[in-house]
Length: 129
Image 1: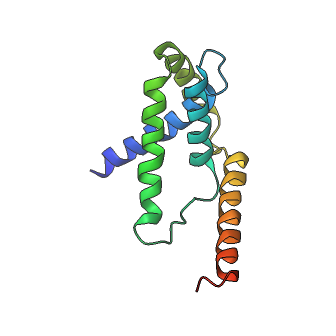
Image 2: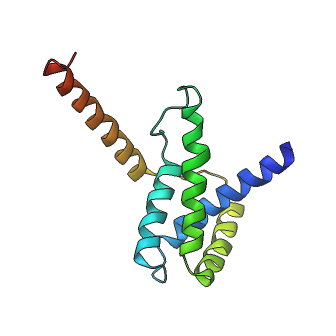
């Protein structure tokens, strides 16, 4: 079972890198391109939308959001584009052991956290408690 989980995790990593390349490919249609950008930004963001220390939900977001985003992108992007970019991803992973980071994902998630904190502060300031 542990071996199958490692294979699954390796495949997810490859697919995230595949989507990273596919999101830059001009042959990728607009909607799948935007979804791929969002999925890659979230998957490679150094922080999570829901921190991992939050019981159960902290890990569920990584186990649900990222695989569903990858699955949906792989279904929407044309097969030849996926095959071409999967080959690029495998070559990139073989030559580059450093995990990429998404500063766009970091900025979006920090913006969500800051907006949520501001809205919560406004709610408290208006005497909601």
